[in-house]
Length: 104
Image 1 (cartoon, rainbow, N blue to C red):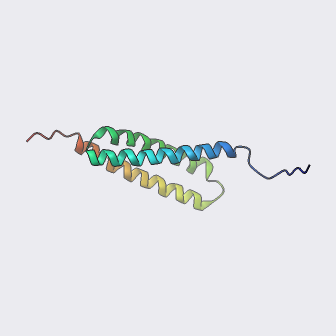
Image 2 (cartoon, rainbow, N blue to C red):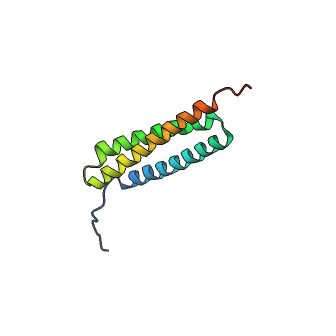
Image 3 (tube, one colour):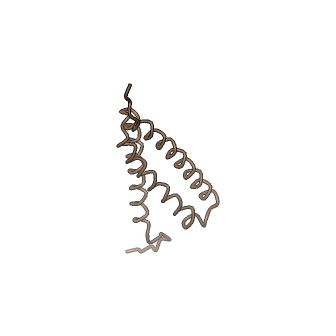
């Protein structure tokens, strides 16, 4: 029986599960934000803001501790963090607009 010692990282499976979780959380974030915008309720958008905070925390973690190999990875993570910040600002504006009373 042949045995090969492949140069494979030890935490690859853990990294794959993290990526799957991030993919699912970003899909959930977009779904809730879209539903909150269509129904004009602040509850869905508030939960999407919570997921934005999680995504921004992961971007900061990747930018500080995980992008020591490639400069392009650092640039991509910074662009993602910038876009998440812009999305958060728009979501806060939408929550403020939706939670205003509509008395005429």
